[in-house]
Amino acid sequence: MVSGLAAAAVAAGHEAKVFLLGDGVLAAEQVALSGASVAHCDADWRWRRGGEMPDPRVFRGSLRDLALWCREADRVVQCR
Image (cartoon, rainbow, N blue to C red; front, side, top):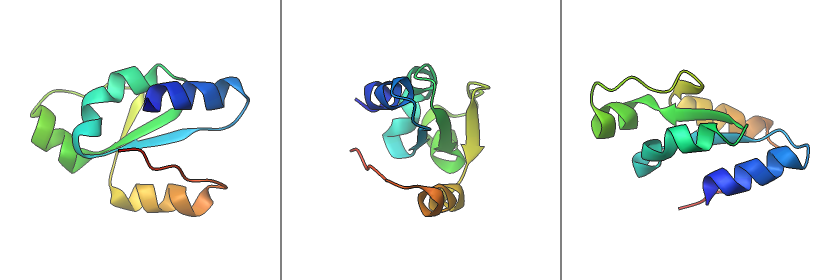
């Protein structure tokens, strides 16, 4: 769902940023294919994916980065 929404936003000419946390980090590679800027919570990544190296297209971030993105955004959509 998130990757499709991000791809549609990018295709419509919007700047899309996706922040993944919790189990969402498991979809990082798929969401990165959407063309959106993608970041994930590094703590959740380490917890759910262990020592696996993240996709180089995905920024390793924190909830602080999410807060900054939300402050900059015109619109914020939360998906569960």
